[in-house]
Length: 230
Image (cartoon, rainbow, N blue to C red):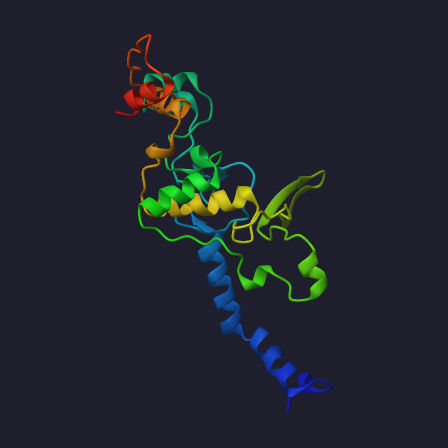
């Protein structure tokens, strides 16, 4: 008999034991890190990342600056030797085109089609932990539960996103559902070129320092996009 069992049922005591089991707590932290964590590409320090905000991340351990979407380094223009054009830029990174940096403005349906065409499964319906069981909560709109950091006059504060949740977005707001889908795209190493529009294709060529193809007077946007994509 333990003191904590006083005035509570056996079922409640077992629940208390489970929630205070060091092994269970450690497992919970590991699961959280698996879902939200990132590794510094340089020193390999593991972070539990609160999503949202700027994608420019600075490691507190080694001060390495990188994109949390693709782990590519952020560098000042003059220090980057990728191309002569970089000298004209400020702080920047050379993200792959399947990085969230470029895909965050895409529609969820576009990313879903991309994943489906490559045989990658994704979630749509909210999981049980996102839905309250009582009748009052069922009448209330779902709110995005993803942890984020918000700027306040006193500094950054950890909180929840709390934005509206559209249907078929796995219990997330549009922004965080796109982040989830994009992570699937990147993990499967899928090229998002099929969902690029003309502007995306032109910008991709310019980023790579490739001359744009000559556009004829009768070339529609779709034709010219395909020319750029080739």
